[in-house]
Image (cartoon, rainbow, N blue to C red):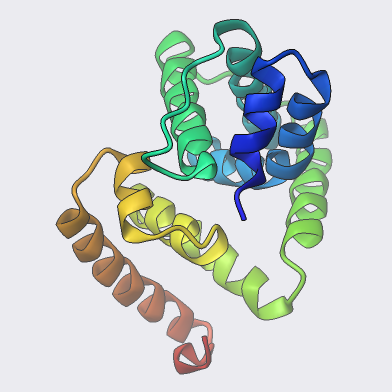
Length: 185
């Protein structure tokens, strides 16, 4: 069920509740995906908002070639790339805000990832190389197919298959360092 496409169609036809449905359904997952890029919850939220602003202002055409989620995450990925181009220098976070940032990250993770094992996998994935993080996140947590992942990451299916294999091997190595039994995944 991909209600995002129908909600977007409703929004384009003038029904504002379509956009509300899209935001309600996709914002948390999009924030977590963008958090993998930014390593900062506030920046991830800002880019998520920018992604939805692009939907409202530019009203890009949705091609049903891919799922709505794939299309939306691609827009979010491009917004993140644009953000980093514009803000090439990272502004350090004051030490007094670090506790609040950590607290916000944990609240979002706990609300989105309910089981303790998934939290351990999620944290371990964040230690991996950026492309490995992306491919594992999109595969494990978003349930995207290799074709959808290829569209989001702008790679071909074979490259994605190879990335998934290498990312799983790297994840297995990292998890085993923490006495996590990989075969139980």
